[in-house]
Structure formats: structure tokens, C-alpha cells
Image 1 (cartoon, rainbow, N blue to C red):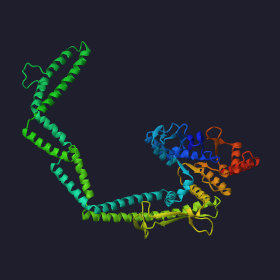
Image 2: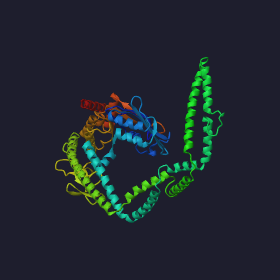
Image 3: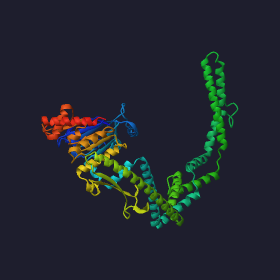
Image 4: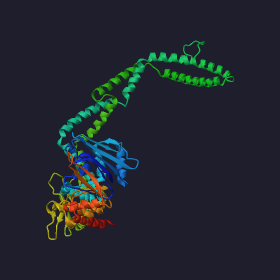
Length: 585
């Protein structure tokens, strides 16, 4: 959960800290006091788009800081991602994150003690927090969002089926596009094929080997300097082992080392240090003997062969002809040839290959159609369960006669998507199958079944979205849920039911609610008030926790605008007592 949120220099908020708790946190305050800036700050903290216009001119930058304490799989996933990016959680498992935005629009992010791209905050945010507000209600009206909501509800097996469909669709479209390109650009492909084959034929005739140019250069250098190398090797061999043209009385290195070793060994009994030096001389003599053998081998293999040298010159000239055309060195020429062979296979426009691609495209089209059919059946099964559970929640949100329907319809053919027969019907098919999903509301018995955007008022949309979120809560999702005035347009008993549902969500999630309804605020485990200070030259706002009497006064203000009214406070205390009873398990 998010344990603490600090906001500095954002909108009307100069510097304030929100101490948050598990369960339900409610944020209230007068209109214009800065409640929205809290949600804006949360959005910035988790990678949202920065608006420099909201940054206070003094001190010229807005800073939002937060401390996360996570558990379970979410903690493992987030901690691993942060560690991979170079950050690290605190010793107690907390994660610190911050976002800074300047008046010039520059933005910086820190996560786990390290500077990070802002996108990293977004990645973490997707795992730990879901924000719902009026804009989210508008998003819920889009068909693609409704389909995504149903797919999320359908569960992991459905998600596996979707992944298989996306993979098959991608492979199918790749083959179809490849086939179309081969047919459309046949002439250009033939021209490129001829050029590549000419180059491959030339390289094949020469048949260069990896590293051959360096090896030939080294060998040619030895042959060109064979006499100088022989003289040097002979002199070195004479010095270390005698022989060759040396006179009999010329001492070699091996003889001198042997004499020195024996001389020291004779005195080793008198001084042990000389004995240790004698051992080292013996090791040196062994090393010199090895060098002598290697010099003999080198001399035996050293041969000035003019014919071989000429052959090397000719071979190097052939390799240079290739490197002038195709690459900087022989290894590059070989790599060019490999790429050319691969490209030739891509350029193939033979009838045999085109027929093979046709058959593969047909096979994959059948696979996509079959998977899309299974996805459609899975969606229809999930739609019935989803509609039933959301309808039950709506009954508890003072909409007892309302009913939600989830229509899973075949996508009309003839649009931008390709068309395939799915379950016996030609439909437009995309990576997510061939369905369109539409949430419909029957507001009361006898009312027509209308899409949400046509059949729901603002207050009904708020309750439908909350009902959907309650249903989603049972299937996991982020541990922190933020609701920004989703109760707009709601009052009376419906407001009490919204508070009750949010309190139920808070049993398994951390819930942050920005609200103007006292019926909702009464259910909070922690109540924070945003208060505006207009005493100075510049208006500022701060946040404080209210409890007991202060909390009753705040609810009285929300109820009647009279925080000091005895009747209002009595009503507020009654509301708090009812909420306390409702929150008991």
C-alpha cells in the first residue's frame, strides 16, 4: 500500500504530507481547496503526464514523493523490476519514489534511490494503483474498454486463449503480407536476386575461410624474411645449446648453468641459501633446454619457398578483390554471403514458393478462425457471469430494478480488419478475435436495453463503474484503488450504499476516495481534510487528519455547510455510528 504521500509546490498545495493507512482513506474539503491536486499528485508520482501550468511559481518546481510497502506477488514483481533497473528497496522492504516537475516543463523521476526514466514510475504504477474518476467513466463507454474489462474478468485461462489468438493472428498476417509483397514487387525482387547471385558466385569461387587474410599475411611475412629469421634462430640456438658453427671451446648457456649449479651445490652444506639458489639454477637450465628444442623445431620448419610465396601473393590478391567490393575483411565478406543467402530466400518468387505460402496462409487463417471462435464462446460465458454479478452489486447501490447486460456480438465484416468465417459467420477479425462487446443497462423493468452511453445518467454511470470495480476486486488487481469523486450526481440512500461498497473494497484493498458526500466519508478508516488558507498574499492549501469531534464537524459542514451547528453535528455523529456498525465484519 501507499503509506505516505508528500506534495510540494503543486497547484494550491504549497507543502503537505498525507499519512495514509490500509483500508479506506477519505479526502474531503471545500470546493477549490485542492482535493483534485491530491489525485493529480498521485498521477504524477506514478508516471502520469506533467502539466507545467500546475507548478507553483515559487519555488518553481513541484515535487511529489511517496513510500510504498508491498507484499506478496506484487512485491516480488516490483522489487525485481526496480533491482533490474539499478535501484533497490529499503532494508524494511519499502520503496521510495519521487517525481519532480519544473515550471519550464522538465521532469525527473527517482525510484529506489536511483534516477529513473518516468516510464519506470508508470510500470510500477500499473502494478500497484488503479485510479478511477469521471474520465474513467467516459473511457468505460468505449467499446474497446468494455471488451478489455470483460476479458480481464474472464480469468487466466481466457487470457491464455487470447494470447494464443494474438500469436496466431500475427503469424497469419505476416505470411499474408509476405505473399502480397512477393507478388507486388516481383520485378524488383528479380533484379535484386540477380545482383546477389553474382556476388555469391564470385565469393563461392574464391571460397574465403574465417581469419584467412590474417593467417596469409603472417605466413607471407615469414617467407619474405626467411633468411633473417634463420640467422637469428641459429645464433640463439648456438648461444643456449652450442653446436652449429660454434668452436668446441665456446661455452654454451646450458654448460655454464650446469657449472654454476654444481659449484653452488658443493657449498650447500655450509650455507643453505646457496642450496636454494642451486635449485633455481636447475630450473633455469630446464627452461633453457626447452627453448633449445623449440628453436631446433623452428629451424627445421623454416623454409624459403619462392613458389609458396607466389601462391600466397595470388591468394591475398583474390581476397583483396572481395574485400574491396563486399566488406572490410574476409570475415565481413563471409557474413555478407550469409546475409545474401538469407535475403535470396526472402526474395524467392517461384511458383512453388508462392503456392506454399498460399497453403500456409490458408492454414493459419483456419487456426485464427478456430481460436477466435473459442474466444467468442469464452467471452459469452464470462459475459453472463459478469452481468449477473454487476447486477447484484447495483441492487445494493440503490438500483434494485436495474440490470446489466453484456452483449458479445460478431464484428461486422468489411471494415479495416480482414474477414474470416468464425462459428459459421463472416466477421472482421483482429488480434483480439472477432467480437464487439457492449455493456447495456436496463434501468427498470420494461425499459429498453440501451448502451451505457445512452441509457445511464451521470449518477448511474458512477454506480455502474463502482459495481464493476467491486466485482473486479474479487479477481485481484492492484492493491491500491483511487476513486476521484465517482459519486458525483449521487445522493441519499445511494450515497450510503456507495460508502458501504467502498468500505467492503477496503477489506482487501487500500482505498483512497476523494468525495463531497458525508454518507461516503463516514465509512472511512482515516479521514483527511484539504483546507485552504487565504490569509496571506497567496492562497495555499494543506491536508490534516481529522478524528472524533473534528471529524463530526467536517461531516456537519458537508451535510449542511454549518460545522458549528449542534443539529448538524448530531446528525454527523449518527451517521458515523451507522457507518461504524456497517464496517464490522
